[in-house]
Length: 304
Image (cartoon, rainbow, N blue to C red; front, top):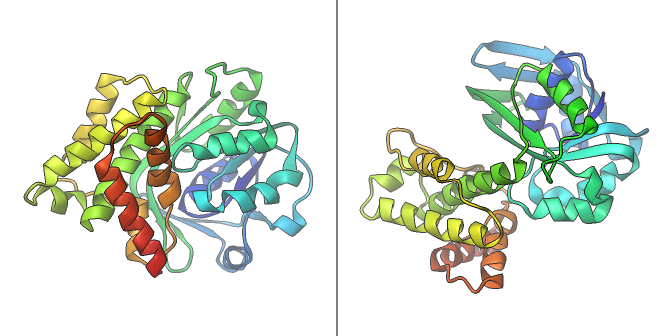
């Protein structure tokens, strides 16, 4: 299978690297700075088991040729418009596009550009970041990737994707209900991002503060009400697990949006929080805490 990984950050670098190690024909589509970094140092994977270095196949938008069987999009959501232009020459009649992005807006955006039949559902769970020299640092053994047809019909094309991913050294979840998985991932990451950015701390600091648990509970309830109005049919066991994971002061957690914010980087405010507010407005839902978070993030972006 010919696979294009759009982006070689922590997510794209890790899962793309594992696919390349498994013998798949993998090319990373990257910008100039990352291109030079990977040419100089290789793709370095630092995992709890040790350090591995790969010499990846690289491409830039200007050098991309031929169609790919699978394009996995792993960039920040605010870069999607540019990436869609970049990958367009690589999309052929049989190409499938698997976005691994935060939020849900990107699905409709990709479908409008390339067609509903080309876009499949995808998400990952991994604790990873990039080091100072661009190395991918996997901080815990967690490395799950979920994928499946958005309508639940996993046809032959999806079976081929599954076969390719199952051959890599990652924990694969071939789902016939990927939409629920996507809603639940958004519930988790948006709740975590909202409370961390609003309180400017990790979950341990929040939960051990006066009113911290009440804040978490209220934000979680607002977000759950929005995604339920949008079509998610709550799975009580799944939502309970998400809340228990967040409401555990013994395990401090932060979101990638909060980490980006504390480092002065651009953030996925519109995609993670702003889109929830738009959906809440569509259903006349009152979400004062989400509004407070959104204002907070807008002020941050103005001050950058």
